[in-house]
Image 1 (cartoon, each protein chain N blue to C red):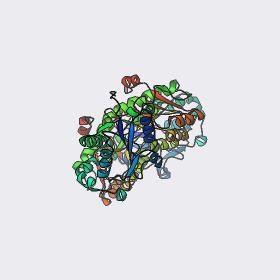
Image 2 (spheres, each protein chain N blue to C red; image 1 turned 60 degrees about the vertical axis):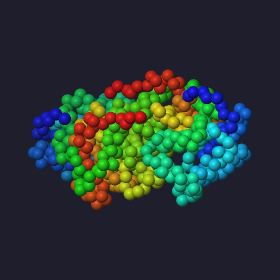
Image 3 (cartoon, helix red, strand yellow; image 1 turned 120 degrees about the horizontal axis):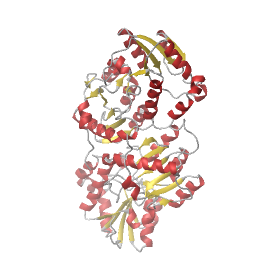
Image 4 (cartoon, rainbow over the protein chains, first blue to last red; image 1 turned 45 degrees about the horizontal axis):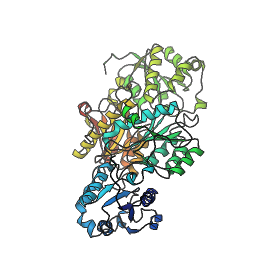
Length: 290
Length: 290
């Protein structure tokens, strides 16, 4: 994460969730002028309180034109992408012109796709900035965020989870696992963290002695953190609590916590920990011996 | 797999599914006398056509006594273990006597538990044999079982899946993954192969151009194959077909196919492949480059 000087103007391509709003607010606080290109059916309607234009996902020409019209050389592409209805993406001439690139995006894993999105914007002359460059307070800190901390058992589960994520690193799959008392309960691939968490509740029928198990989440090695940083938020805490887990541990500085205040409030209320893993733990993580 | 001479008498500890029946039949065909200790609530009632005694899962003394009474020095422990109702396992004096060992079984991953089960029986003076030693026809062959074979795309998915399973080898987690056109759709941990397959259907909404994706299943390195060989069967084929997959590839000689005739019939009828992976492919499997 090299610290580049902040731009004076910033284009924000906003998809779903609260993080685009947080980025806009952080930019304004720092005196950065912003223009939002809000993706229809994706972005929170709240985004309309900032200077903006709505475009459909298929309006590639419209999107590029809006950013150029607002004289934004620097852009942040931020927010979750909900599965679009392919019949309603509203393609324009820009979409057709860039079709070969867009089609090539649909091949390969998620990680590859997002790297290509960055390359596409860079090829169009934009500097692609990470949301965390503009709003570093979104990043998970090192250590506990709320009043609860992992105990020795949880620390062991975290170490196991980190080693597992490290082993999965080259496969372009999900960046999250659940480990409970030394058992790997679930590994995320394409289903997403929430879906993975939901199945953990059912898997604990034999071992329901209070809360147990930790969600461990970290980026893949080489992951494009500018557009694809892993995120947890209040909903993640909620599902993890419902599934009987004891806490969430995310890589500090490389995972964002959306609505951190609300996430911490939910964690505290449920005697649940939400903690940032020190980078040194990742470096030290190794597979268990057979 | 060292080829030990077959015993003249064999005790069969039978849990759920059709494989215990197949082992009994294979033993009789080879002139081996058998005595079945059938686990209540687990074993197929069909098992009663062989010389047998029913015991509850908690009747450890009864189980050991039945095997000794039938003068079986060699035992096969075979079949799937359905989650027992802990209030109905019917503990006896043998259970209480062996309680420290039994409690120690409940710690650690599945793999560790099954290795301890083998050690427990060995400690009681029994030779623990693998079901496949008695019924080698249960083992997946090398190459296709039915009329359909993997194409080049499927072979790539299989290679990716093998590499992923190899990377997971030291973690004592599930031994199955689903890979579709280079994407890792799902990784099995504690939920079981069927549950993992079921979620793959929902993950393919964007890419529904005919069948795609392969279930790849192989044992973990160091897995106790005598009591814990991975199994696929007709139900696996059925769920994989429903989930839109193109085929199943299992490690030849180290995965059992239950009801192979029925599994192949289902596969053929659905233009689905069921194939055995050559051991050389496992040796050659490596992680993808970043």
